[in-house]
Image 1 (cartoon, rainbow, N blue to C red):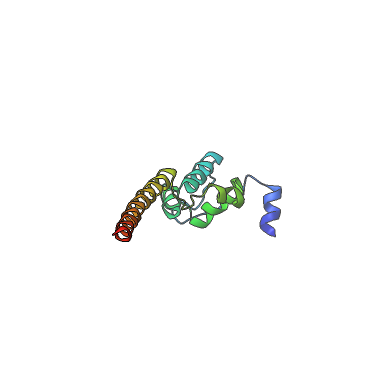
Image 2 (cartoon, one colour):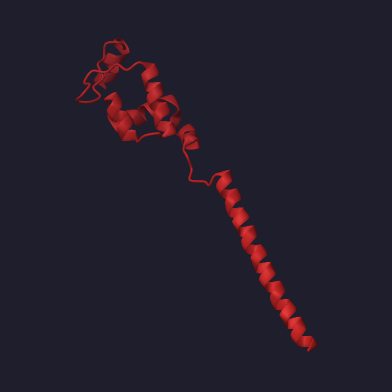
Length: 118
């Protein structure tokens, strides 16, 4: 409650304690934005991003919520869906397998027809 009151009276004076390595860190909005972008693209882990900046993972996720919110983040996340190329390759393999099955069945049918004629 007191912190909120001080922040209302003196918004630029409040010191934000974010980590032991960087105890007073008034991060620029651009730094926060880049950190959140790195978090969303997941080129490296969230822990690694936070370590590089000098904040905790919790602070990093708090920035993410402030900047883009959770619903937008969920749409950005990589879902383990197969790529179009992988799906196409799988379908081609299935077609090849089915063509082999057709040939095998056709040979069986031809053999049965020959036996019936004899």
